[in-house]
Length: 245
Image (cartoon, rainbow, N blue to C red; front, side, top):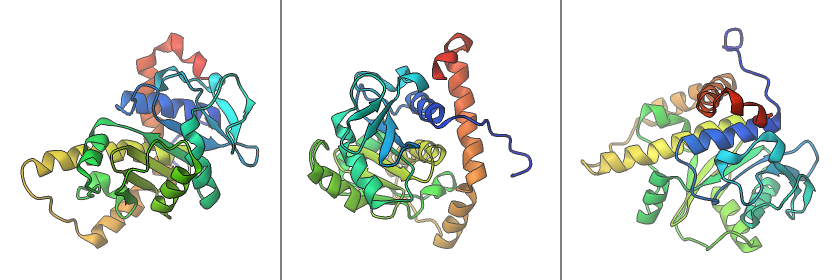
């Protein structure tokens, strides 16, 4: 994989913008709800989208760089006040480089039922043992208390299903966060389909862990992200590619 997988050298801003476009195409948009952030090159700062723009309108050039208090360091406009809980996760998790928070349809439906996400299919094994569950909704996450609750529920895992709310991912890279966000929504859709027909059978733990480690290989994750990026760029059209950079 190191020799044969060719992955474009996108900038951090470009990868965040591409993630917004990819997740929009995968049904993660919910009006102006949801945020994607990534640690910036400046300590204690991160990139995020401007409040008032949908995921499908984000480009590398209209991203904001903000500090932990959401004060804008570069760019025009303001960040979503709900970004505040991201700061709590970044402080608690030095390993996290990117956070995705969205309200995709099937994850949201599952969250309404108050049931954790079940990982019982080969395709979703990268999520095995990685998805926490916050059973009680703390309200709109614009205050410090919500940030503390969500960060605590996430713990050391890569993802959490938030009851009556949606999804949060905290990952080692933008690529990993994007790919796992897609898989979380797919897993929720599979679970709802399977449960409509019967009981979901547990998957073998050892085999699930082996599949988890194989699929989450950094190079493979990068190649998967690049594939979704190519799809998003084709959908945008050649005349709209340049605003991403």
